[in-house]
Each structure stands twice: as structure tokens, then as C-alpha cells.
Image (cartoon, rainbow, N blue to C red; front, side, top):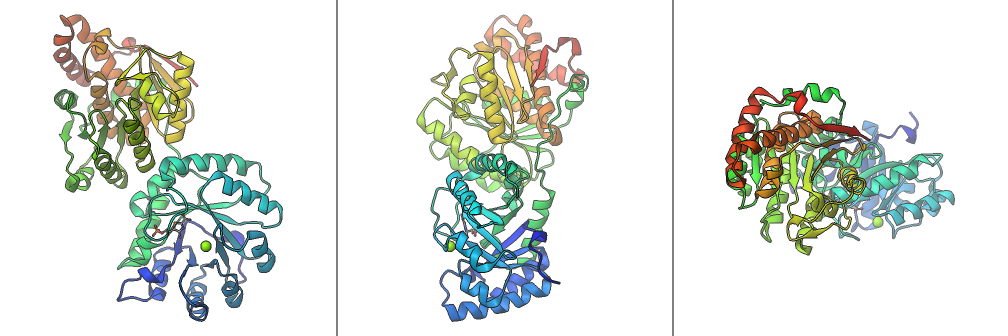
Amino acid sequence: MPFNKSKTDYSIYLVTDSGLVPDNFTLEHQVEQSILGGATLIQLREKTADTGKFLETAKRIHAITKKHGVPLLINDRLDIALAIDCEGVHVGQDDMPVVECRRMLGEDKIIGLSITNREEYDAALEADAAGANLDYFGVGAIYGTFTKKLRAEPLGLSGARNLFAYITEKEKSLSRQHKFVTIGGIKPDNTPSVRYMCGATCNGVAVVSCIIAAQDAKLVTEVLSKQWHDAITEPVLQVTTETLSKINSYFGTPTFVHHITNNVVKNCSANITIAIGSSPAMSETRAEFHEFAGIPNASLLLNMGTATSDGVETFLAAGQAYNAARRPVVFDPVGGGASEARKSAVKTLLKGIRMSVIKGNDGEIFSAAGLAGKMRGVDSIGESLLDERLKAAFKLSRDANTVVVMTGKKDVVIGPSGQYVLVDNGDELLTQITGSGCMLGSVITSIVAGHVGDVFDAALAGLLLYTIASEKAGPLSDGPGTFVPRLIDEISKLAKTGVQVEDIKVQFGK
Ligand code: 3NM
Ligand code: MG
């Protein structure tokens, strides 16, 4: 059958590097095993091979890919691609200009280009207008990689999402759409997060080391392919007035909440988690993160309150372990805008971890959204206008593809689509104790862990449980000192009996 490039499946794209093949195998073996495991596209990328040797390797690899009906592209070397008449080329920014490539290869071959930012994508669209007719882009690097010396800082999940948002808008106005794959440090563990964050415009993952260096290339490819195909691309968010009538169905699922939290609140966070029927753990021991993430109904709460300077690495290791296990991660960027170190920690964590929920006060959310907040110390000073608050929370929600819970006089729960709920519940005493936001983080994490397909409603349910419990506890307290134990008592009761729909004070909006 003649090659028809429009049928190309970009989902599982193997890029070679013979230097990484384990001693007991050949490159041919790794490529064939990978195809048997589900690789849909192969790129021969041999940066150091001499021309004669490269040509011989290319012929042997092409024989294998042809046998299996998988297209083969050659990195950089058009002469090799022309000599063996394979299915196309992949070029970098410093290689043969794409317009020349197209002129030499003709319209039937695939041409792909590496890009790392908006400017390179825009320039490629101009080259397209000049006749390049590019087929796809390799977007990267997503994560750090040992396989290639990078031209720019890795994009991270947040950077990739941002770039894909730009690309997605522009592609809509084109008469012919391109395909996109992500590359750089991608492996089965982080594939669901990458797919979730990049959205439907991203057509696949391109990998080198995780397959080429594997002892069982077929198995790794199978796992990668399964992770890619099982991953959801859009968050499940549904919020309707019906949500309120089923709010109590969110309580009562016992979950496991792994806290990495600050020294001030450990005790009350553990107590409130137990009070609603879940199990807390406080651990910063990396050796047990993967094991904990495998516990049924496990979830992770990352609270930056008193993070130490090496704390970011611990947060990253934990967040990535829970991402890999596809268990929810809730982020509480306590004091996130209070210092340069904290701002940079928030950025690093949003690059490396897919968060299910981000919870913070005004200042923390403004800062995480990259907007000037009103931070002084770790307390949020004053409150911005509702409109401004909604804008900041929406921006963060869209950028991180996550549910944002922003506390304040009126609390906001908002999702990436812009749908939001304003919550007017909550006792005044919540503002007079330390750790009230941190305990809310524990409650939300615990409830989200039992309802991962329904993160928005679960986060709202957690917020309502907590704030309505505080309204019951307030009048029973003599002041802030007795308020905390009363709050724990009341939440423990409400988690069992459920809240009264009449007590809920919310407004829906978009
Ligand atoms: N191109 P691994 S990163 C070939 O950013 C390549 O354009 C990149 O290797 C880019 O899967 C990269 O082993 C190497 O991390 C990817
Ligand atoms: Mg190149």
C-alpha cells in the first residue's frame, strides 16, 4: 500500500539514540520491540554517526518499520531520508530550513519541526505560508533530560499548558491544522499529567531514553501507550444547583490523606482529618511516597507553610509519585507571594506537578496566578474586589487546569471553564485562629480523594462542610481558644449527619 501521511498516528513516537541501547541488545531489536508494544511512529536520530554507517543503519531500521507499517522519519539528514526513500524528516531550529526541506522532499513526505516557544511556532507558520507545509511539531523540552543538551529551560507542565493554549487558539484560524507531540523527559509515569495539561491539541508523546534504554522495550511501550490512551484530556467538572441536593453524598468515604504540611498546624490537621472519618499521615520520607500513593483512596496535600530550602525537592518527589499513581494532589501555597523564594517554589511546583485543587487566600491565589497580590507576611492583607478575585482565580484555574478554591469573606470555587460558586458560609472566628485555611485544605483533600472524577463538586462539598461546621461551632465557643475543639466536634457530627441544604449560602456564576 502506498504511504498516506494523513493517516499517521502520532500518539507513541519513538526517537532513537543508539548510544543508550543496553549492551545486550541492538538498536534494531529495541525499535522492533517498541513497535510490537505499540509505537506508532519512529524517528532515527543518530547525532554522531558517520554518513556511511548512518545509511546502513537507516536501511535496516526502514526494513523493520516497513514490515510493520509504521512510518520512519530521519532526524536532520535529508540526504539519508532521500537515499532510503523513507516517510519523512524531523528537523531542529538550526537544521535545514523547512521550506528547503519541503522543496527537496515533495508534498507526500512528513516534515516535523522542534519548537520550544511561541516565537518559534509563529516563525514556523510564516515558513508554512512560504511553502513549508509542515506536518507536525515536537514541543519541548517538557522536563529536564540527559538525552539532549537543551536550548532553553524545560517548559514544565505549566509552561507546556501555556504554550498549548496559545497554539490551540492559533490553529483554529488555520486552513490546515498541524499535529503536535511533546518531548523531553517523558515516561509512562508523567504521561497522564502531560496529556491532561496539554489538552486535545497534543496528539502524542515522543520519547527516547525510557524506551531505548529499557531492558524490555516492548513492555515499556505498552505501558506508555496505555497511560496515553487512558488519560483524560479534559477535567470532569460539573456544577449545577443539583450539586447542592447531593452534597451529603460526598461525605463518609474514608480516604487516606498524606500531608506534607507546616509545623504550626500538624496536630489540628491530623485531628480534623480523623474527625471526618479519614486517615492522616504526615511524612516527608521519600522512600515511602510511592507506597503511600498506592494505598486505596490515597491523596496528597502539599502545604508550603514552613517549607525548608530543600523542601521543594521533597514536594516535587511526592507530587510526582501521586501523579504517577493518578491520585489527587491538593496544593496550599501558604504565603506564596511573601518572599521571592516562595514565589519561585510555587512556580517550580506548578511546572512539575499536576494539581487537582489549589486552595489559598486572596494573596496566595493572586501570586500563584502571576498577578500582583497584596501580600505582607503570610497573611492576606485586605480583600480585592470580587471581580478582580474572580479573574485571578479563573486565570490560575485555567493555567493549571485545576479547581481553585480561594478563601476570603466570600469563598470562591472555580474551574477552568470559568464556572464558579461563591460561598457565603463561615464563622468570623475562622479568621482569629491559626491554621484555619490549612485545616480546610485537609478537609478538601480528604473529600476529593473519595471522588476523583468529580473534583469540583467534591472541593465545594469540603468547603461547605467546613464552613457550615464553623457556623455551628462559633456560638458554642467562648472565643478563639475554645473554638478550635468545637470546630472539630461539629465537623465530626456534620460529616455523619450531613449538612442541611437550608444552611448552604451559595451563588452560582460563570
Ligand atoms: N528533543 P528523553 S528533548 C530529542 O526539546 C529531543 O526538542 C528535545 O529524550 C526537544 O525522552 C529530546 O530521553 C530528548 O528525555 C528527549
Ligand atoms: Mg537537529
